[in-house]
Length: 421
Image (cartoon, rainbow, N blue to C red):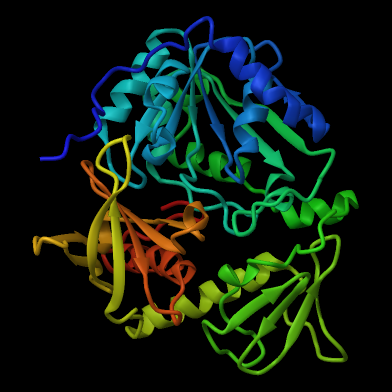
């Protein structure tokens, strides 16, 4: 049997000789983007404390490193971050997590970090934002903060998505970027506030919109292909309603079905070409319109990806991906079902029911060579599942995962609070 990543190893306090190195490696990008950090009750905050950060790009980590230095920290990191560098990541204080799994081991590790007197860094959205706005937060977050019983701070970065969006990582030269580093709860707050109030304040603290921020600051994107890749997020045409026929070139977004075109200006605003009306000048509004359409399918009982041919790569440990084989994936009201047959004829199956997955992680053109995929996890394995047909969207599957979960919660009389899952 292939060895599994040892999730039980306790977190390592950042080695003293690596702490200045992480700072020095982070500093060039922070300086080149002229990042301004606004401290609110955190300038002299010492460990132990919990630090929650939003997640738009790898730049988030660099700004966070600058913000807390020289405090020692441990960081929750997805398993793919450990590939080929497990020793290094463990020794700079990283704690491995398989995305969107309920892992009691992680709680023990975070408790150990607090016991050590260090900073426990968590990215509770658990994935890069797809369009520069807040992703859903787990309802268990408030309970975790209360259990750890130390101050809770929030670091919300602005400008990282519009500088290097998940759907096209090329830098747009955005500067200055900003970060709000705020003390949100004291230990006394966590003891006395109702859990619903703690969660409500967490959701409020995590509200951000990078496109709105860019326009309010009047900062221009210095890149001539700023719309390229956006069709991966905006997969449905708002003019004709057709899915999976959007494309992009340079600064243009194009529907290949009806021919309508939109240009993205230097401030990230969309404009319909010619005299045609612009349905959604604001990228997040287009994305939320797609979500509403997916929600309507879920509520009508018609959402179903159909049986899609896929290639699957497994990541049981941090050594390398394993080509598991070809098979099928289906996503509907029963959740995800993936069936794979290896080259040697061995059959594998992964079932992820709706109640066990409030959101999912997706990748666009992962590692620049394998295409778009859905990242499905158990406590022991991670399957990167690549659909091999053009007429599908991993973005729609991500939206449907959330909407199916919300619908299930409503069906059992426990609807989610706004911003939570």
